[in-house]
Length: 210
Image 1: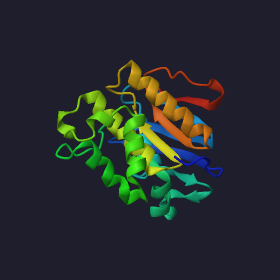
Image 2: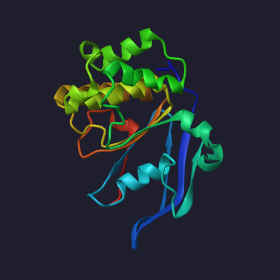
Image 3: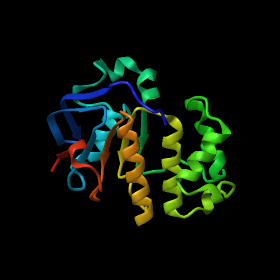
């Protein structure tokens, strides 16, 4: 992870999202800056996942704009994707590859050395599982593997949909530690979670879609 990111701002302006004939949310605006975490809360079906997919550029909003450092993410295109890492409900790992091989695929995001790969496995408690097929990892270990990939991408913006899913107590503490390091270095994070985060409240913005 970089020691420090330059100041960054994610800004949503008057977002509206419609699914079928249901308006999930409308006229939604917010700003998240370097060193801040936006926690999106709300009941199931309130639009949390849809919002995160809009912010990541996977889904198009029905109205409104999303800007990164003052530029529309639609116009930024690949440049935005280089700055943003998205982790959804699925871990995005290939079960037919080992844990280490899954991380090696993250080389497409930039120059990754064997030392940094081993460091990511060590940090997430998977160094002893490096050569185990991902299909044979536990659900919690698969989630840890997805978190290890976050460390290798070195992206300023993390967009995370229920990142604590399947993690045990130690895994949750690991995630909180990684998140603290990320924002301390100037990173930005947007996440949905049903769990309370053990985090400095001054860095957290909470927004409910219910």
